[in-house]
Image (cartoon, rainbow, N blue to C red; front, side):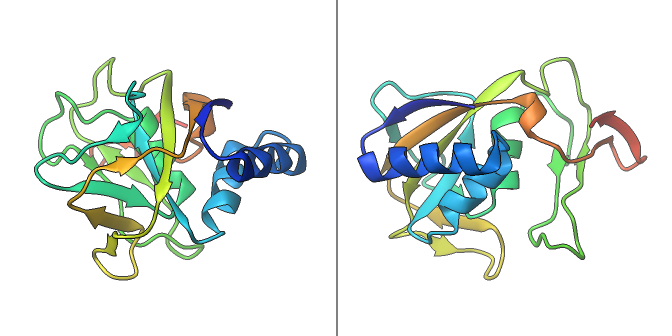
Length: 167
């Protein structure tokens, strides 16, 4: 994990504190930052130079789960067949994250990506009690970290066959 950008010294200090406490476990670091309750994470393959996340089809998504932010940063849905990447809206110890990819190809699993941190205000939790939050307005990136595919530690299966293609 590498801090790419931050405008906020409090967030920077929190990153540094969490890196020391969790010894580089990126998911735990992201979870701890999100547990503060003021920020959401947005996983992506790009780092926008203007530091603004824009809507796609009038919606911008964020998450309060580190695992989903890492998934979005590392897995690409480009060129997949329907239904693409499948994973649950509700994740817990009883319902752990498992991912199915339909039509995976060599560019589906990226070597690196970015997790951007944005303010949670003006986002709605849809569906309620899920990891997904959405808004119809662009958001300023407060901090960004670069993550690697090794940071995503959940099983990824080919279609619905339970044949692992990653992790």
